[in-house]
Length: 350
Image 1: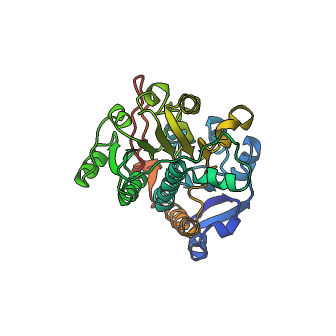
Image 2 (image 1 turned 180 degrees about the vertical axis):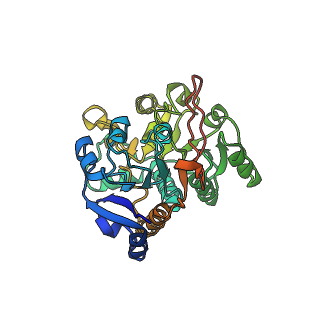
Image 3 (image 1 turned 60 degrees about the vertical axis):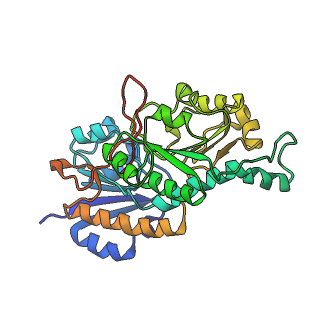
């Protein structure tokens, strides 16, 4: 039986995958490891991947996967992504071209949920600004006045793995938790756990704090735009630990400046310091640069899980598939923001 060709793209090279998986993968595939710290452009990617039946890649090293790239990779049958979110990939295009996609849906759940709470605690306690004040770099107009979370209502947008864990952690702080989700099974599970559920406008108007924990679909518009943010209580806090694109940044900035939002935290870098540096200096916007997942345990768990999924793919039994040739779907990963002409609808990443 002819072995499949697997090309692995990673900044850490072989160290990105648990050592115990390498021998097993090598028995079923001819493996090429490309160690690099950025994604190749289209021409370079076609040269590197021309012989690949399967690609294993981190987000950092994954080239832009569009029709032109796929035209140059006629042998490609699957991508095993070292990531949970895949909103940068056109799943419909992959499906049409017979290219599978496998992901790691649960390798960073706890870390990301804890990061969501850390962002909320920073906004409510002004901890990040207090640190800057102690260093003499906070502006004089920046206030350290915060708010208690105990007794406040937290609205969780998306009650999947991450959102459910955030709800549990918030409960430990004495917060009342409500939620919203478009997935009926998620709604049922949340109601069973005692979490009140409703539509997005109801959640926004009834929350002191909103935590966005949903995933994002390729090409979808923000779930929280100017209209949705206008539903928030005056002086609410907003955190977004999953994808920056779920919140309209310009609308969030306007809401912070108007006082509708007391603070906004996002696990990305979305503001230009030359334009909105005052919001960063005063701690009213907190950016954490997509670092929520960057934890010791997550790296260990991810290297093992990625190795297991690469092995499963080369052996023809892919795991945690979003789409895969031949209809092999072992776990459907649900996109969460539907592309409708009406208001955005929000669900969760399973």
